[in-house]
Image 1 (spheres, rainbow, N blue to C red):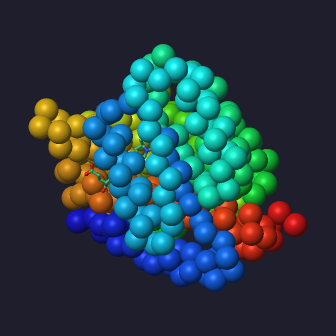
Image 2: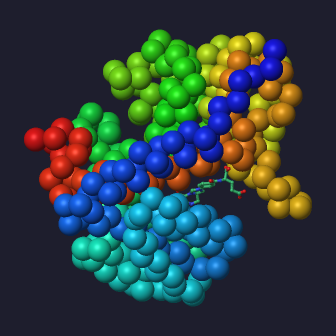
Length: 293
Ligand SMILES: Nc1nc(=O)c2c([nH]1)NC[C@@H]1CN(c3ccc(C(=O)N[C@@H](CCC(=O)O)C(=O)O)cc3)C=[N+]21
């Protein structure tokens, strides 16, 4: 068997073109969505990701507000920029690029973000709303995973999904989305404390590999025909991306997300989606605003 490729680039491009139309509609009503980013330090990887987000914005007509601080910035300086972005009406949504330098209290910074401008969907208030089934911006990578599976007709209703990893951005938040009535999946969460990972993986209709451990998922772990999402990003000695999924899995799985070209571009598209939805909500239009009423 050769897995069907879950093409994140093509899917993200289609979503972006829909969003471009919504941005034009907002502009017609005098509302201009703007994505802010705060980058602290000079990590080349983070610089590249942030640049990509601003390129995406330009593509669909969203303004960009780029804030940068040196790696030596103090907690107070970082918090001051967050307060400034909260106040700035040109910024309808923003992210603080993670990770922050080690001397910065990351959670304290994230809690200061105005939940209404939380483009990542990772503010504790918004994660809490997700738990309570209230409307909230959704975490971008988990939402991107679900949109990608849906695009290619992978059944979620009743599916057994094994999520590998317990990071906040994916592992801990994806099960919250998958177990909503609208998805209706059954989730097993695995992590480094799981006794028989291979045994769990072989039970899965869908495997989401978000451990950050190169080639963790081997062909023998995957039930023939299962869908496999490769979310982990590691780099080899030459800087090339190495995912959590061994390439041989393509011969066993029914569907496989490439990495790069799978969940990464979907994450970026969902960030734009959150910015546009926040601008619509602030303008009193859009699904979020109607759901909140
Ligand atoms: N506050 C915050 N929000 C984030 O969403 C966030 C973050 N911090 N810190 C870092 C991670 C990482 N992340 C990626 C998004 C897209 C790609 C992506 O589009 N990757 C391309 C390849 C890019 C390449 O070749 O390097 C792909 O998968 O095809 C990758 C990584 C968002 N992150």
